[in-house]
Length: 188
Image (cartoon, rainbow, N blue to C red):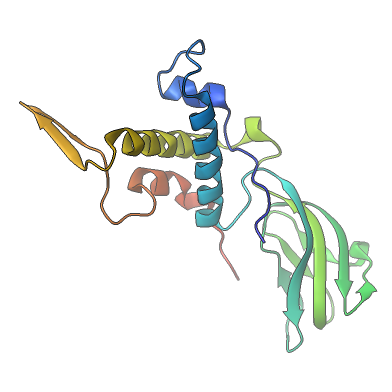
């Protein structure tokens, strides 16, 4: 089940990047849709939430675990609300939590079914999203707009002028990927 996405940039900032004046609202609905799609795709690529939101009862199977560590899927962690291990609610104050890496350490091995409810994300709100990520979203929206406007045309040449619209067989434009790379999820 996919969680609702919170846009990683504002319509106004994206329009500035695209050199579209605020008074031109003809593409606002499309740009907002593309921002949402690019944010969602970026989160899939990163394996992390960009803007902080609550994750409710994220499941972990620790049945055969021989570990005192549990790494949450989303981080940095803002708060941990509850941890339920085999139906028993744990006292979170007795746990050592590395919020920046989403790692919960305890003195004994994790066991059974563990459910964690917490909030996590790279930024507290849209305005505090790192500039590299916002730039990646703007570039991705620009790429998607150019792809849509080219209607499947890969490139055009007129005299000495040549433009390439599509990067063949690529899910994410390479410039976007390079801006996002430093924020990708790293597992233990």
